[in-house]
Length: 313
Ligand SMILES: [Zn+2]
Ligand SMILES: [Zn+2]
Image (cartoon, rainbow, N blue to C red; front, side, top):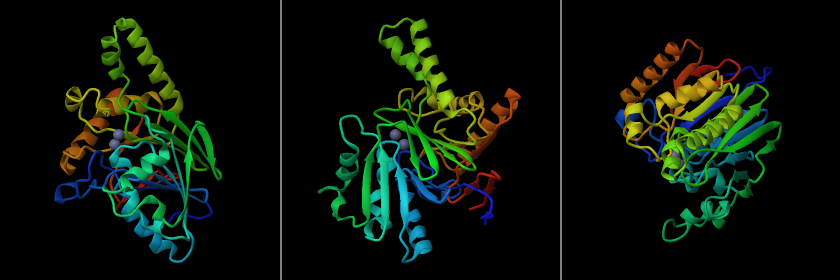
């Protein structure tokens, strides 16, 4: 247990997988649930994305709070299924005692409210969003900086199909950046060349975007980042919106991050494959001669920010 007299930020991974949930014996260690991370800091409960991992989080919160009110803020990065599909199964949303504030940007052509309500409409789901009895407030974001109590949140839009945000959360114990879905700007080079820009112009735009992201992330204690593909796999998935191991490591090194947490594991990758990818990331860091801790997110594991200690599941 963290010492309550010391400001500490606790991060717990409830879902680490990208694209689709893949429970089973081959994903036991890194986990099968899709994106959901809980952050406790400065009296706030902040939930990052509502993939299938939000279901066990809801059960744990009910157990912890019993009849007390659960107040939390849910930050949504984007509307892809793997980031919102757990919301209808989040039990605290069915209790009128609870207060849930949801934050996110409008998606391409749809409001945040529509994005959240649509999957719960007939014929997709038997219960509509209106029947969720908790006090739910949906906050459409337009500001790129906003507070959650004492915690400050900065947002940026990242390189992913549609509208997709990344968040950096500043707590009294340090800052945590969450970019679960992001493709390196290198992809812009391919896309922009197709748009008849000269390769110099394309390079310049990609470099500007990359520099902006590096500034946004610079000095984060923890960066939870899309590391879905091996470098070899990435070559066959350019434009799909996800990162590779070497792009994740180079972004983290450039932004002088303390700990990089590889995230959004590919559904085709079993535990051994993720082990091998983590190892290759650490080798890249060693070759760079710079210092950066690298972990791969494990469902059920925690990071305590003041100690940056990984606690076993
Ligand atoms: Zn995703
Ligand atoms: Zn996505």
